[in-house]
Length: 104
Image (cartoon, rainbow, N blue to C red; front, side, top):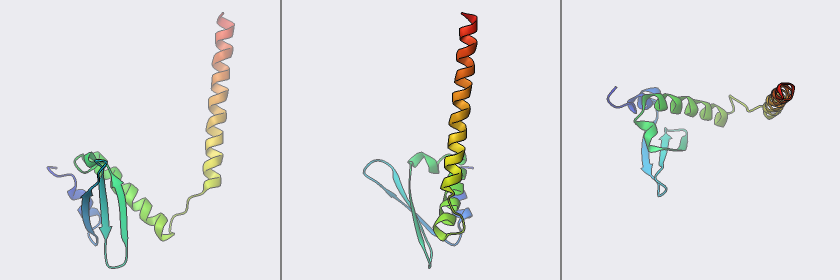
């Protein structure tokens, strides 16, 4: 597609979408309709790359669900998963260290 940003307009047809430059070279994306306004700071390259536009659309949909209360963040589950990942990484490092010790 010549202009990947068109996917953004097609994904949110009920919103007026605008872009404003920021002093730090990022862009302020504003989406508004009669009931609500959403804003998000994005990198300018995001609107010219088809994959990045797709990711942006998914992020915006998620953020809108969180803002509307139809999706909640489970911080306890997130902490549990982070701890499990840390434990797995620690166990892997120990196995590697033991293997190195046996080779020496």
